[in-house]
Amino acid sequence: MGMTFDYAKLVMDNEFAYMIKHVVKGIDVDDATLAVDVIRQVGPGGEFVSHEHTYQHFKESQSRSVLIDRRMPEDWVALGSVDMLTKANDVAIDLYDHYKPIPLSCDVQKKLREIVNQAEKHYNVRLSVE
Image 1 (spheres, one colour):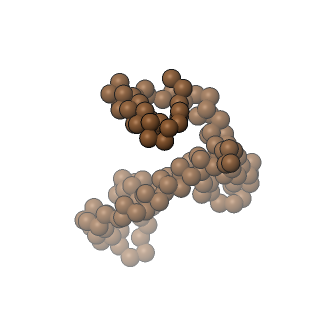
Image 2: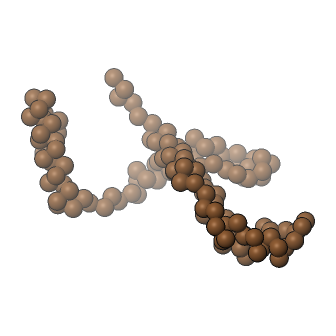
Image 3: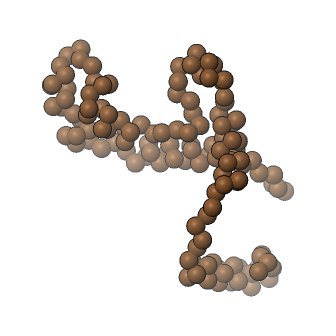
């Protein structure tokens, strides 16, 4: 009946959805992102990684991952070879232990209750316990 649920998988799916949304939103193409002036300034064969422009813009262009380790393999091994599933499980446990949801407003709670009541009436079932 599909009664099992993997919280680590949910954490991974959340990260994948974030990355997909990041890609789907597209890439801004304008003077700032093209950095034509910086390219002219640095010149052929120049180095852009330490340039202030790169620092100001790289966070916007690359999706940030909590679970995916982008280090070189030897560095990953030296730091314990923690895989994505283990990280996702740790995040899920931390969320379970510490997350405090923001309560829904009374208006939203009331609207949700109306929707559930309508569904219960329509399907002649009891979906929730009050």
